[in-house]
Image (spheres, rainbow, N blue to C red):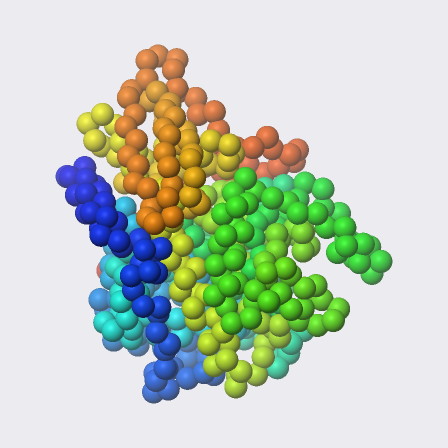
Length: 480
Ligand SMILES: [Zn+2]
């Protein structure tokens, strides 16, 4: 049955793409997404506190039950729900063969522009679905998970108008959540916080293909790696910090071409990011509005490196306001500057290669390990045997390994116009053949390196138990 669904899906997808439904052809075939005129009856350009945010999300899910699903991935230290809203024409069920993507806002509590823009993005999507072909296509082909605030406790003690400083940056225990993830290069000894643990659990259950993390305090799209094998740590000396700024070297991933491309998609569709103008005379100007994270300044425990290395999710850090917490009357302008970027960035999930790994009977193979040859950061299939990888046009080889099957190498081509659909069939291995996966989270690892643990299986103490009472029955398929 699964097989039949998968094949139907493949067939449909294929004909779909032949009919010019991919992002790039879409760009040519459909008008640009339209400007959105918010209806202040539902959502104004003001900052919303946690209760107001919750009310908006609940009301939206009630008003648009066919396009939205609201769930909480856990609670902050002070008990605030970490809300995620799915916006899609299939909000409650993963669409087999189609990508899940996400935005996370407000990981630093005092950087709330992203938090508000994400609420408007939700409102824009639900009110444009029936009238805007671009939005309709995106929501019909993508499940978009939007988390307006990863740090609601920090936001609660932040001050509007505070362009700099750290008040509200941290969670209620004083931890910087964007330094709280396991790190690929260095051992991160920081104690895991509830907000970070909830996100780790979340992304272990849903295979996200693409992600944006929204910040403030600069105007740049910053891509992995954030950390580097040789970053020095400057604790107090201003001279040391200055030295570090000038000596920071890029720390590039094997997917650097993709990350640069994704960052440029955001920067170039933004009203001014790609001009690369410095926020202040003392801060750096970024060529084309993009930078490698470590080249700007290295950090340990960041979220984007974790997404990429552990789960193959391409995450970019989007710094969208020079002032961390600008006055509310500027929010409308920030929306206008970012609207197109936020939409076009998500559509990039439909670029590259996608398909299924199947056994000879056509049954999907879960957790097959895949790697694009020459790009030593791997990824895995979902429980439906699906995989996705964002790639630029070119010639590639896909290496596929699964326990009990003979490994395979498959050549394929990626073109600009539509994603390449690639199904890989594996045959059971003879004894001693192909039983050992030669990579898992590959690359020769630096010493003291944290190896990612195997994805955990779902247990009752996970996400489902933290979902708000009364909404439980609605969510059984969300993580499918
Ligand atoms: Zn930040």
